[in-house]
Amino acid sequence: MNHLKKEKLSDADFRKMGIDSWGIWEKEVSEFDWAYTNEEHCYIIEGRAFVTAEEETLDIQQGDYVVFPAGLKCRWKVTKPLKKYYKFSFQR
Image 1: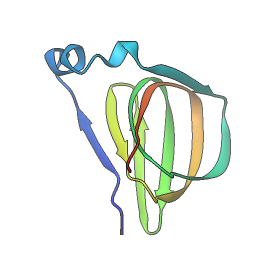
Image 2: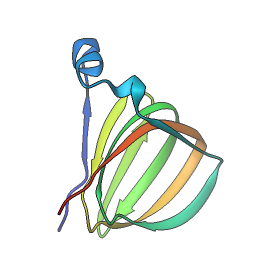
Image 3: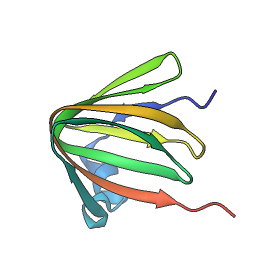
Image 4: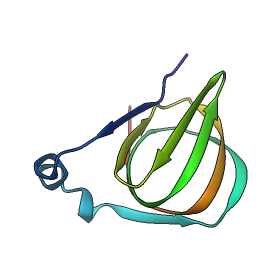
């Protein structure tokens, strides 16, 4: 099983990683299925969502740094409009 990873970053780590230069994605309150072909790193700017993969549910909200592994299939339930920085890690 590919596990979801969530953590809080220090301000120094946020700056060092250049997160504020990543793309921004926004989503209204909704539910949808998603499959990741590449690993995604994201930082939640605002909002809240529950992401369920197999028997694991992750509650993500403002200030969370999340890694979604390549090959992950999940269901998103956005409960407050979501805005996040994101970057894909392309694997060869």
